[in-house]
Image (cartoon, rainbow, N blue to C red):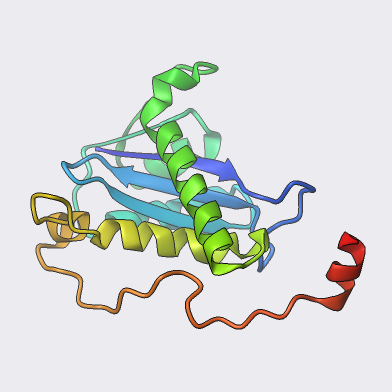
Length: 178
């Protein structure tokens, strides 16, 4: 079972993230150790959601996809031939699992940006990094979501978001902030 949702991610004045990204498509597989996916998008297009789901699913057979009744998600899931169940329109509690994940992931992204000393416009880089770091984190039982999904431990380097980054703010933005 998979679940997903599109969230609007800009700063307080509506400025999109680096690269012009305004939306994040967040997904979760509901296994014992939940696997997260985060995909920055410039617009809520069916094609982008289709490829995000296809990338997230890989070669696995998916029995069901649960989300709100967003047209783009419904079309993408239908095109992939996955059974789709949607939450009750207007009742966010009926889609509580993914809504809680959106909140948790957005909080983690904000914390990573603050810890790294980077402005909010870098969320399109922080989101996928946080999802990966969460997926490879080893739980108390010695298993990670990565291992549960792929059957092997993650062999890549685990580098915190923002490590070894030199950021020089734009003089114009600094003057506008005064």
